[in-house]
Length: 221
Image 1 (cartoon, one colour):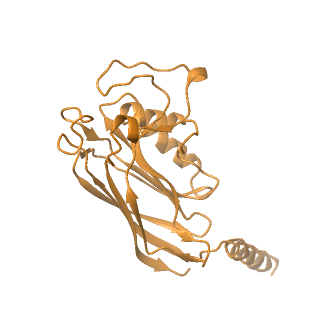
Image 2: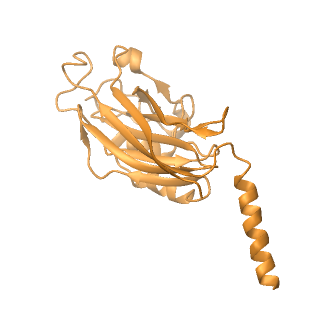
């Protein structure tokens, strides 16, 4: 009886915690990245044979940040931005698994400069944000991605059916190189700089593609 009472209390507490968040239930979203980076679209900022590294996509809460403009790169973001490797950021996501991170998708294949790739990922109540990252290859430490979009419309307490926009470009602040194919110039930890947008200066203000995140299904539980 005592065990049953404790279990009931725990369930009620959990339900009470989740009821604090504006959007309820679990939603599956399709995250589509339509890359558009080529010699035709970016004649002044496309190195021959350029492509995108395997994307990393995560759903998470407000207390986790994959990356953000003017923030500093984690070791995982540094690895993605400098080499396209995903092992470090995967470890970071696993550390936050089911605390601040709900789900993760780590692609295994790179994408051509004009390829479209899609991934399915769930959000739920306290973890209604989606972030993504992929490296421009080759580059010193430049990447594109999605910067912590909240899929919950907090004004009305409902999940968005769709969010879409342009893909920008950022410098991770961990290498001082200024050209796509120049020599690596890694910065010591104490000299690293914040993440900054470089779409205007390096890509002539031309987006490198678009993202579209649209609702696939919803589970009220």
